[in-house]
Image (tube, rainbow, N blue to C red; front, side):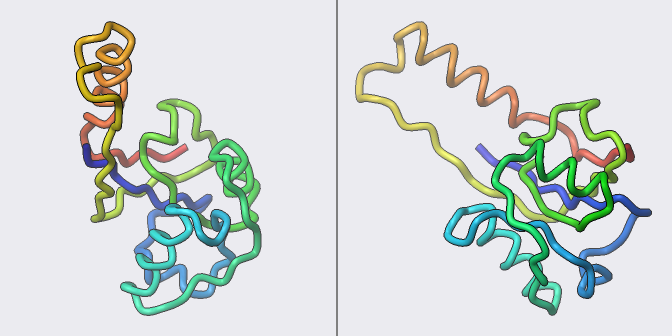
Length: 131
């Protein structure tokens, strides 16, 4: 599965490089979300200046909506219609994720339902919405 990343701002549409001097809301160092954000920013020519650290995506959305910084989150972390006050910009990046389960368990109804639900949540068109 490929999951798209979103740039979250409370302002107009901007390119990632334009946010070089912005305060950033980053995930905890050592997490995948932190690593991806730092790598995206470095590829854009800067290192993000962390103002806040938060691992809960609802908290990240609230901080961005309050104008306290910008952030990058996986697209599947933002429930459609729940990003009030936040501009969502699709980034040209993907993260590959895998689902692990016990060998031979693919036919179990709970495993099959889980795989179907996760797969469906990752199947969406480029996601750009203003809140």
